[in-house]
Length: 253
Image: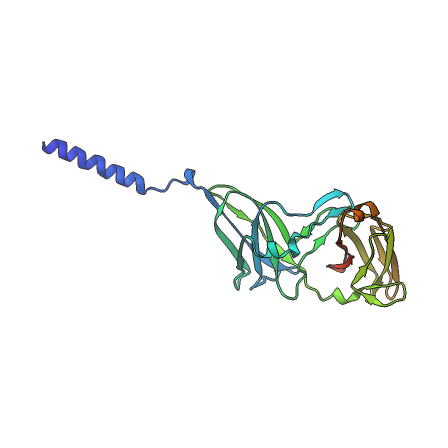
């Protein structure tokens, strides 16, 4: 009888010890961590970092055109996912993240909310504060981000055909084309590239260019009026990347 009780206690002890041992192979979550810095490598504290499940990055259509959805300005997106802020060391971390694909967005006052930087010759090597991350069970995914400040933003201006500064262009459903000017208000030659969503826009006359100080480039946008006939309202943005910033001009009716 004593031997039986001893054996029973031994089995119970082994069972309890086994249950307490963590098994990393059965982990169902991972984590995301990284640091946020500026273009000079300085670590940035108090940066808002957000992750949302799913892939929401711009999708390249060809070497010089990128498709932009409006998810990153949408109120629904702002309220989605999980959020945190970087510490004094520029570090952020999300724990207990379910396995899957996530989109990460980092923003801070005084820095560009959304930027895509590309090599002006190859249209490759895209740098963005929007990152796509794959999280795996039991693994930590590192994703470092850098932000670009807005100090150059006032050197790029949009003008109408009369030379007046504008931020948007109102069109009608019957508009087949419109135009605006990119003005270099700085004191150095400015290189730029243009990006836009395809919906309703057939194309632009220039996808990139260089503008000397005090001069302008005329941009002509052509529209798909058949697309307009199927829509009661329209809202799109032409994005111009220059001087480390993305500046948009809204087109709507």
